[in-house]
Length: 339
Image 1 (cartoon, rainbow, N blue to C red):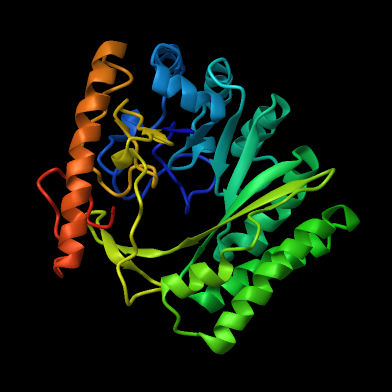
Image 2 (cartoon, rainbow, N blue to C red):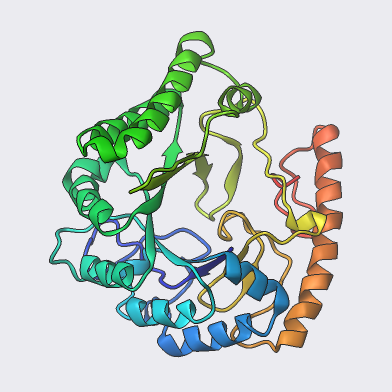
């Protein structure tokens, strides 16, 4: 999959149009004049994606337009159409925190869905009742599939969020019975952990949840559920070594790119690329080229060079973990939580 930043502003507090922003790295240093990707930039990217085999292969899986908040970009409908020429499936991530159905952001989103796009959301409990829930009711009448991201700080927090979704889909009728059943399966699993292993580590959690399906497939609607542990992030955008729900042990990411398999590529608005699975937030430093300014040949050369650097850095990270030096950054610039 290609994950492409099309907008810097996340606008959690000014919900309909860009006024101000409080984003973390890697977006915080982008000036307001460059908050929105332009259609011309999208055209350059789409053309080069087709010229670089690795990127083209990933695009054939899916292109995900993200940010910030992608619907804040006033050009997002045109940008969607441009990237649709490079990929069979283009989705858009949204926080769905919009004032109403008359919001320009909502109208842009609806137009994209009518053009064959898909919207995925992240659940925010503080925005659920007033903003997300009413618009999600509309959203599931327009599209027949979506992924919901659930970011949790502890097990009760996870259970509370799955309960919000369970109650919501229970009210939507028999067409969503399979979705409700999946959510109940998760609730049963989490309830058992809260009762029997309330202070479990990540290994116990993963083992206990491992056989639970990620998707509820139905004739009229398919829901994908992605459960993501939350992390403390410092003022400079540096992530903690441990997650909030599982604070006892380092929360490691097994990076496919360091093992020679690029499964995802994040492309920032500046054109810079990273195979980071956390849309660039982990601050992985090896450079994989710039999709706006580099030639296809130069991009491929950087792919090879940086892949080797990542592999070396991962080996050093693993040695540091074994020697009790977890959290130490290696000279290759590989985040210490990637192993």
